[in-house]
Amino acid sequence: LMMTSEQLKKLYQSGMEIGGHTVNHPILAKLDDEIANQEILQNKLFLEQLLSITLRFFAYPNGKPDSDFLWQHKQMVRENGYQAAVSTHWGVATKSSDQLQLPRFTPWDKTPLKFMIRVFSKYN
Image 1: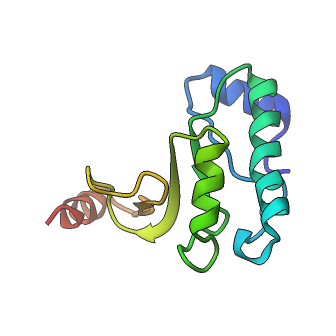
Image 2: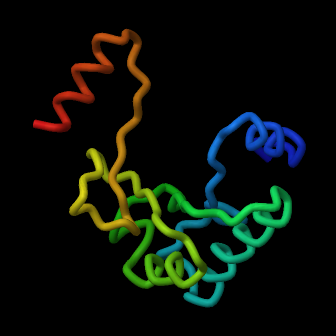
């Protein structure tokens, strides 16, 4: 495990938003639909019970659209009560972005200047 249940509770109590992923981090596109849905749902139920909250957001394992997850997985995410989900498609989310496969980028630059340049370049 990346974190214990107690560490996750402390993270949430300190103000962090907690979202779902899956139980075993599988590539959803390689799974039978029933198993994929169980991976999504069981993780959500576990975390919601642990934290006494309703999860709003989901992150696809590995997250590459049309490769790691497919259209039916977006439907499963919606049907299991998530408001939005992030993929690993590179970019910045806009008002017109698909809420069930939002793009994102990693903010891990070595200097604040490089980070700001990269952020602003995404908006142009």
